[in-house]
Length: 69
Image 1 (cartoon, one colour):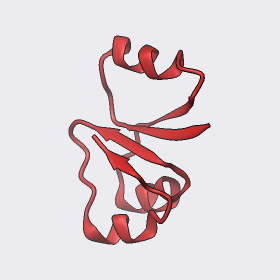
Image 2 (spheres, one colour):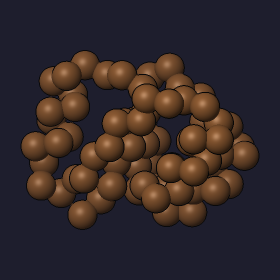
Image 3 (tube, helix red, strand yellow):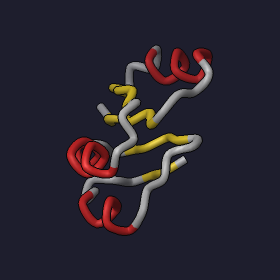
């Protein structure tokens, strides 16, 4: 099962689409502080975001990451 981080808010239909897919385990991350993102995001295979910013320092910690959308 792929772990997907939903960074910040997105339309409920999009969240439901991901959550109802048995191939994905999703978590919504609303705390966009850099320290929180560095702490949480390394555990995920994919990240979807709208307003959040993922910089090089955060990406360096995300060894499992395969996709950002």
